[in-house]
Amino acid sequence: MTHSTPDLRTRRRLATEEELHQAALALMTERGFAATTVDDIVAAAGVSQRTFFRYFATKEDAVLLGYRELDDAIDSLQVPGDPHSALAALLLFHQDQLDQLAQDEADRYLLLQRLISTEPALRDAVAARELASMDRLRLRLQTQLPATPPLTSRLIAEMATAVLRVTFDHWRADPDGSVAELPRLYRQVRATAQALVTPPRR
View 1: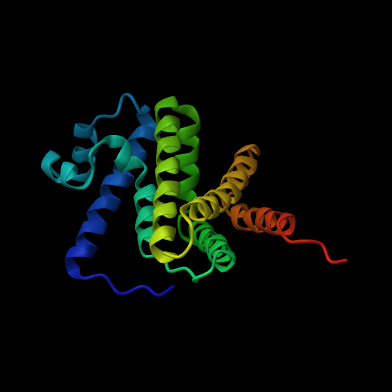
View 2: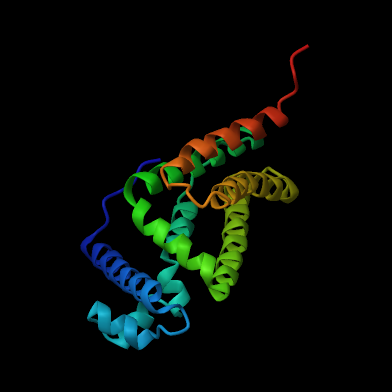
């Protein structure tokens, strides 16, 4: 998948979003989710409340910026025109996302996961965003595969998401697991899933 270079306005927006996210994550790690306010976040980032609400509706949105970035990637996703190839493309899409995460954002992601594990409100927010992202993926598939029945598009989206979810569940079960292990674990789960839906040779 190719990416065009963002223009100046987009780069500024992304930089401001990143600053607010980093401030939210640092403050919530230090003080806890409930004790961190939007006022605290904007003060740490050196921006106004107006600027904050231009980019985020809630403090949850700020600290969970990665889900917005995932949705942006889904919106630009291109998949082949048949269901089998589309599923394979989605599995590789998630692999690419995890490879990038492990390479560029490992430390931050580990901090975020530790925060989520101790904050029920954030766990609920994550669950809601995961469902929303899966539905977004389903709708993207329907757009990309107009000849495919909606039920098939939904099944492709849920199968691809299930492989990702099982990967994260196994990873979170190991308190000593590193972010660097996520891509390898995903490849293992992906291979197992593909073997289950591939008829054995006789």
